[in-house]
Length: 429
Image (cartoon, rainbow, N blue to C red; front, side, top):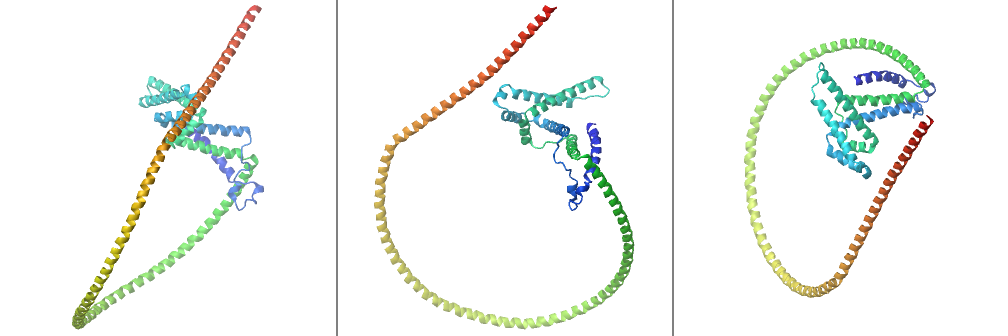
C-alpha cells in the first residue's frame, strides 16, 4: 500500500520533470543549437537554498534507512561475521562497555521476533490473533529502529557490512521501493535546481516541439500515402515479372528434356571411348613391364658396385680406428698428469679447510656473546613497551576517574542548590 501511494505521488513529479527537461531558455537556444541535450540541463549545478538542501538530506537519509533494512536479514543470519566486524570497527573503550554483546543481543531479539511472526497463523476474524499480530509488528518496527540507530551512529560499521556481504536485495517490494526512492531523489534534485523562469521557458519550448511534431506527423502521413501508391505500382510490376518467370520456367523444362537426350548420347560415346582406351592401356602395360625388368638389371649392377666401395671404406675405417686408439693413449697419459695435479690441490685444500675450522672455533664464543647481547636488548625493549602501555592505561584510568568525580561533584552541587531553594520557599510561606 505504501509503495502504491509513493508511486502515485512520484508520477506528477515525473510529468513535471519531463516538461522541464524538454524545454530550453530562449537566450541559450542558439548557443546550444547543435547540442540539444545541454540545453535541457538546469543552469544551477548545486542546491543553494537551505530548504532544498534539507529536502534532499531527508530523502538521502530515508534511502540510507532502506539500505540498512535491506541488510538486516543477512546480518541476523551471520552472527560470527558480525562479531568480527564489531571487533574491527569499535575501539577498545567501546568494546569494554559490552557493546558487542548488546548489539548481538539486539540482532538475536530481532531474529526471534521475525521467526515468531513467520511461524504465527493469524486469522482476520480472530480478535486475539489480530492483537498478537499488531503487537509483533510494533515490536519488529521498534527493533528495526534500534538497528538503524546503531548503524547511523557507526557508519563505518555499516560500510564494513556492505563490503563483506555485497548486494543482498532479494525482496522485490523492497527493491522496487528503493528504486522509487532513487528516482524520487533524481527528480527532486532536478526540480529544485530548475528556477521558475527556466521552467516557464522550457514549457514554451515544449509547445514549440509539439507543433513541430504535429507538422512532422502531417508530412509522414503524406509520405505514407505516396508510399502506398508506389507499393501498388510495384505490385503490378511484380505481377508482370511473375508472368515472365512462368514463361521462363516452361522454357527451362524444355531445355531439361533436350539435355536428357544429349546425356544419353554422350554416355554411349563415352563407353565406346573407354573400350578403345582399355585396349591402348594393355599395350602400355606390356611396355612398362619391359622397362621394369630393365631397371631391375640396372639395380643389381649398382649393388655389385656398392659392395666394392664398401670394402674400400671398411679398410679406411680400420685405419682411422688405429689412429683414434693412439690418440686415446696419449689422452690417458695427459689425464694421469692432470689427476696428479688435482691430488696436490686437494691436499692444499684440506690443509686450508683445517685452518678455517680453527678460525670458526675461535669465532664461536664471539658469536654467542653477540646473540646474548641482542637478546638482552630485545628483553629491555619489551620491558620498556610494557611500562609505556601500563603508563597509558593508568593515564586513561585517571582521566575516567576524574570525569566521574567531576560529574559527581556537579550533581552534588546541583542537589544542594535545589535543597536550599526549597527551604527558601517554605520560609516565605
